[in-house]
Image 1: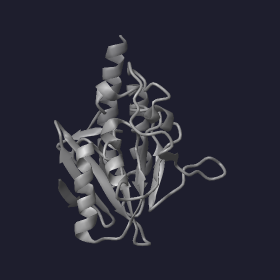
Image 2 (image 1 turned 60 degrees about the horizontal axis):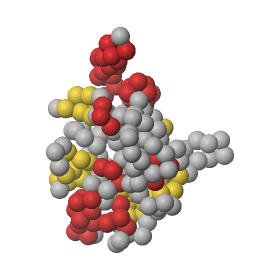
Image 3 (image 1 turned 180 degrees about the vertical axis):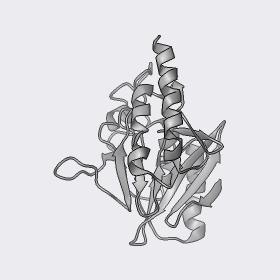
Length: 230
């Protein structure tokens, strides 16, 4: 597992299967830590080793960008040692628990046990609440309840599968596993609103100043989607 500190409060933990898989550890002001995504089952050992070797503060919670198997695989391995709550968008939970069929899938996915994952907290108006310096933004398309987490102080967007990247360039999420590519591209416009300094994705490398690449990315995707419809 490759460990890299990407900003003042955030570490990237990367492993490989056929492609790279990233998860992130975020330090809170109270000394606690949050894990964003849980990767593949084999990553549990490396994630736990990160906390044990560095003797950092306690793991307080796990936040999920969505419920696909490569984002929740290490959950149960981690939870055997760390009794912490796990959160995802409420829309996503029935899909990851297997009650609803992910778009474009033929079989229900039971990626987590029922009741394990709780809905992200909201205020009285239904707005997703900031936790550990991370503000969740609803970014559906790759999956129905996908969220990205923005660390405002560090100006880092933890994008999950909102995009992939190659050599620091924005690329579309994996088509095979994306429920609605048109919605995914629309959700990607969040980087125009937030203008993060860096974008982190699950599959790929860091993208610096991603808003500078957005017009090229959107134009390319609009052309691709139009050609498919035609």
